[in-house]
Every structure is written in structure tokens, then in C-alpha cells.
Image (cartoon, rainbow, N blue to C red; front, side, top):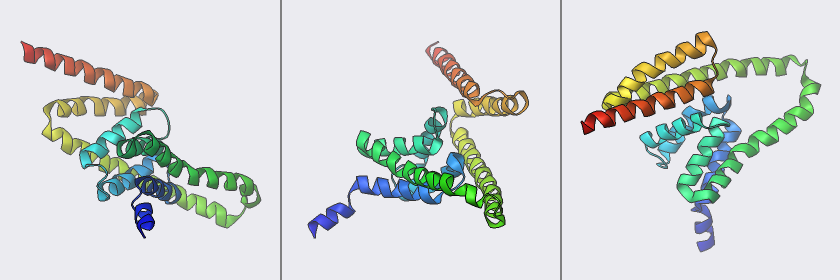
Length: 197
């Protein structure tokens, strides 16, 4: 009885099951997963709303898939390096398995009208998921910026500038993120000097 209880309460198992479920049932890639991850992490009280926003920021700015980066972040916060490894395994195992199966069998169904219809429907739904995630994140960031004057100024400058540069100049997102980092650090240094004077 005691073994069953400890097995049920095992945080490594909880992390694996949570991220395995997310990896298996959340479609649309990292950007579409963000909204689902946000809700799940807050519901489980693993992270606060501000910590989830920080997690998304860190995951977006680092190389790699956003959802995988978030699983590493959460797993590490909960149970260190082992927690991070278990979370990543849970997140990537469903995708890895499904992609192998799809690669094996998709050619046989390539001209199947049902399969093609399903793929078109999933594409459209994914677009909705990504848009909903973007709007939710924008709302959270703007609300957070209202509480902090520095964040408000940086958001008012960097957000439209980033959007225009990526949309009209086609600059790679990496350079935009690095630019935001440099502007943020520079602004922080200026603020510190002003406070010292």
C-alpha cells in the first residue's frame, strides 16, 4: 500500500506523464503548445503566472523547440537535472514515435482524400491556436508592463520595432531577440546611472 502511494506521488512520474500527455495531444508545434502549457502549469501550481511568463521568455530566446525548452525549464525547477531529463523525454517521445509512424505510412495515404482533408483541417485549427496564444501572451505582457515603468517603456519601443523589422525587412528572429536584449541591458544601465546621480 505504501509503495503504491509513493509511486503515485512520485514527482518524476508526474513530470513524465504531464509532458507526455502534452506532447501526445497538443497539436501545432511549440507556439500552439504555449497556451496549453501555461494553463496546465498554473492549474498544477508548479509555477506562478509571472514564473510561467519568465519560462516562456527564456524558452523563446534559447535555440531549439519552445515546448522542449519549457519542459527542460519546468523539470529543472521541480526536480533538478533528472527532472529536466524526464520532462524532455516525456515531451519528445510521442512526437518521435508518431513521426516515425507517419514517415513509414504517409506515402501509402498520400493521395487519400480523407488524409488530405484531415491535414487541411489541422492546419486551419493550428493557425487559430497560434493566434490565440499570441493574443493571450500580448495581453499578459501588456498587463505586466503597466505595473513596471521600465517594462512599459521597453515594450512600447521594442514590440512595434520588432514587428516592423520582421514583417517588412524579413530579418531573422535571432537578430531581433539579440537587439531586444541589447536595448534592455542598455536601458537598465542608463536607469542605474540616473539613480546613482
